[in-house]
Amino acid sequence: MRGLTDKIAIVTGGASGLGRGMAKRLAAEGAKIVIFDIDKKGAAATLEDIDQGASYEVDISNYESCETAVAKVVKDFGQLDILVNNAGWDLAAPFMDTQPELWTKIVAINLFGPMNMHHTTIPYMLKVGRGKIINIASDAGRVGSSGEAVYSACKGGIIAFTKTLSREISRKGININTVCPGPSDTPLFAQFAGSGESGEKLRASLARAIPLKRLGTANDISGMVAFLASDDADFIVGQTISVSGGLTMHG
Image (cartoon, rainbow, N blue to C red; front, side, top):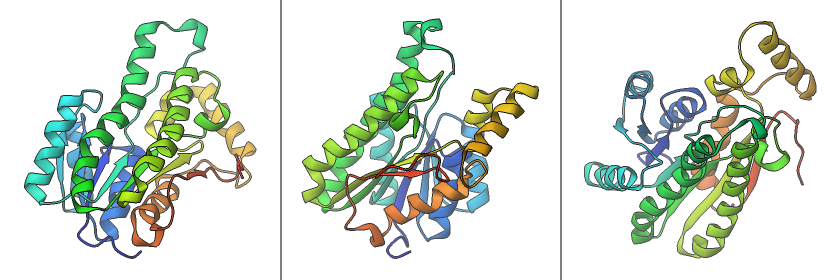
């Protein structure tokens, strides 16, 4: 893909799962990777896989943590070209069985976290008049997901936030788009599905419901992320793209 060589790309949640796949794909396309994650060991493993880049221990739910880390990236690398807002977290349970303490944590990570990252990175992009931001939402934010009411609300919020912010700043050279993974084989999905026979039954039933007959993988999602980060996507802005094997088909 065009235009990714030597670009500086921050990937939040790059220590595992889809984030690790995104970091590896962007690195393969020539970008220099910076991982923001609270999992130092996992981030180090990702960097070992790609044999380049840097990692910073960042709590994206904390504005000051984001602000400090982003400033350090610009100081250390001299530029900031791409932001992939991938970090996320959930604890599946029926909404009426949950309490406000859990809602607060889910919202802090999945909604305020990306907002913090936008607010702290965009000023650097505005200075040079260019930048690419890819927000990882979820098809749960488009069609809902039982047991994930607050998470779905956050992801729906990210979709709307992407469109609104695109209207505000796309004329200044910053492209923001959203990728919505469908059910994917990740540590978060494993936590959601649970272990044992019930977990295997859920995995199998979802695979049957997907037209392509399998769960998504990091490779499936990372290709779309790399495309949206590249020069090939310069005329794409404010869009929401599902990568779900056909489980959700939105016009």
